[in-house]
Image (cartoon, rainbow, N blue to C red; front, side):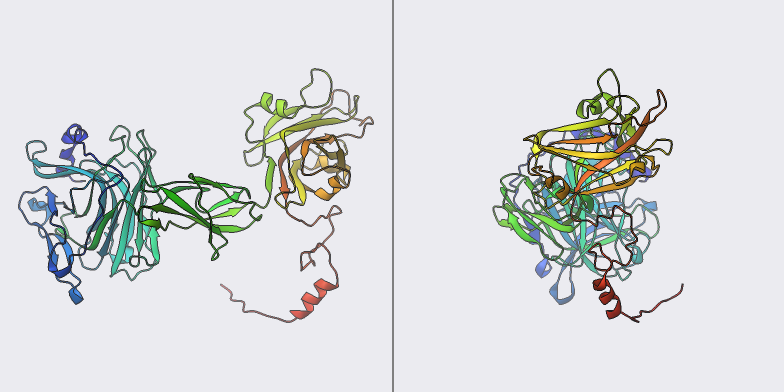
Length: 568
């Protein structure tokens, strides 16, 4: 900001004392400017600095009697004109609020359209800052084309006493396309008390296709990552709704912004802060959905489904809902429609993609060796430590299992006992998979997995290759769950999982030698191709884990089919 604007820092302490009482049941208002007049009798117009009185807020005639509000500054900042002009529609304070307006980005002036929420202000007579005019604090959304209409962008931030230096980092969201000399509909949603969630959206028209949306800015009473330390940590609890324009540069002189269909509603802001986050991947198939609601919501509807097939599936009592079991490796859309005094308010649509498998153990929750040793005790008597926590290839945590099978009992096991018996069938899983890596200096040790149910029935499956423990690269080992159930294990009541190495015979390791492997990502997975002999199955075109006449039929049906290859 300019030197003039920076002088407003003197009123920081004063603005902190400006308290505006507000509740969540604020009276909604809207303004159409129809008939070349104001619908609301409460409009106020202020600017800073207010020295030469060339700022104005007036209703203009629009085409087809579609009149609009124009905020105009006609002179340059070099001669003391205002650099910021605001229009406040009503003196009604809001907490959770959606401020909306039609903005028109045509024209040669590269100024800013702005929406403000939870705005507080004072009008200085110059005794505090040296210049008369409005001193305001607000959550704001900017729609601007300071680099020309071909470069339209939106952003949200927090402004304190007309300053933007509260912000340490900014995020401008570009609007796709290039033909931006037209009208759009802008919305600013502000939800929550601490934290506060601030989101800006731009649509082709009200209720039309979304053009761009900012990441949600999260403001807390502490120092946030985007916020300069010590400038203004506290959230804005409530305030007025406004529109504004600004230009601090001497050229082009002044600013111009036009607004239509301006509104401020407490029962409009959408639910925010979804979990899983929008676009999340690897989401568990039994995911617990959660979100943050606006204050007006007395109920909610959960919509969920694959893309294009969302359906209302629940009306939970609270702000969480466990969906599923869902399908493995699928993309889902979901949204929360909040229900208030005026009925359901449609929320935003989010997406997530479920994991290919369900985690049984990923080792990420263990803090140290003692924690993993308590969860995975080994079978060898004496004061030996064969289980430890280690770092995997991507820096994640893994389990290291060491073994000295040259000594009795000539096998080493680590066993996880589940606090509650697990049902490995309820999600449609058909395989148990784990990742393992070893060392080429290991001698060969038969490796096996053993599963035991709550009744004590157990079954063991041995890896087909005794030299698997010598692989220095991470390998997946996948076992059909049917192999355990065939051994008498009740897969609906799994109590123990054991990883073991050794045959019960002397391994031939040297005296005091320790071999070891790493284990990670033990998961339940849907049907997979079990190929223990590592055969070449590239000809398996239909995915049934066999190369046969069915694959040949697919090949012959597509024989000599060709597309177009274009070289760069």
